[in-house]
Each structure stands twice: as C-alpha cells, then as structure tokens.
Image (cartoon, rainbow, N blue to C red):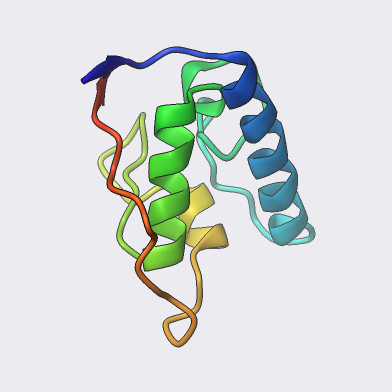
Length: 99
C-alpha cells in the first residue's frame, strides 16, 4: 500500500480530469463536493495519482466511486461514468492507498 499524496503527475491528471468533468457538467447542476477528485484544486483527491487512477477505473467499468465527504456515489463519477453499453474492464487493478 502507498501513502496517498499529491504528485506532479497526479496534479496534471487531476487538471485534465476536472476539465473533462467541467465540460460534461456545463449547463447542468454541479453537485460535486469541494474536495471532489473531479474538481480542480489543491486538495488531495484531485492531485493523487492513486485516487485518480481508481476513479478512472470506476468510470470505465461503471463501478461506484464513493464521495470523499458524503456516504454516496461521487457526483463527478456520476457525470463521467461510461454508458452501460460502453463499459468495459480496465486493464489495471485498483491502487491501494491510505490517506
């Protein structure tokens, strides 16, 4: 298991993930929490490569990615998840980590 932390690669991935989610949510209600992995910012979830790769896997596979602040599926994941007919198995395992 790895310590969950922000890295330069995670920060860049987080910027792109947030950009794509912002575009998907344009003109729609934005229910993402303040520390959402899919929201740009200097918080852990948007800069951690482990968190973002797990989020990406969940998007592709349509398996729930849970909110970091509330006991519910992540609003960013809901906006970004693949359609049921487009989902497939990502070619990597979930990354274990600790906050």
